[in-house]
Image (cartoon, rainbow, N blue to C red; front, side):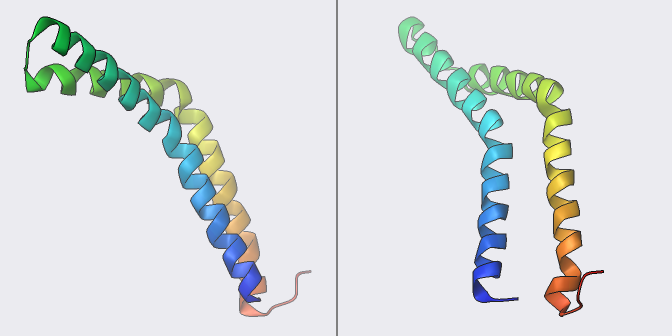
Length: 93
C-alpha cells in the first residue's frame, strides 16, 4: 500500500464524516439562527430556549435520516474491511 492509497483512505474518511455530520450541523445552525432572531426580537434571553429546540430538531433529523446515515457508515466500513488484505500485503482472491 502506497502513501497515495493511505491519503485516499484518509480523504474518504473525512468525506464520510462531513457527509454524515452535515445534516445535523446544518439543522442545529438553522434552528439556532431562528431562535436567536426570535430572542433578539422579543428580548427574552433564556438559555434553555436555544437548547431544547435544537435537540428536538436534531432528533427529528436523526429519525428521518438515521437509516441512510447507518447505511452509508456500514458501506464505508465494509469497504475498509475489504481493503485489510491489501494493507497487509496479501493478494486478493
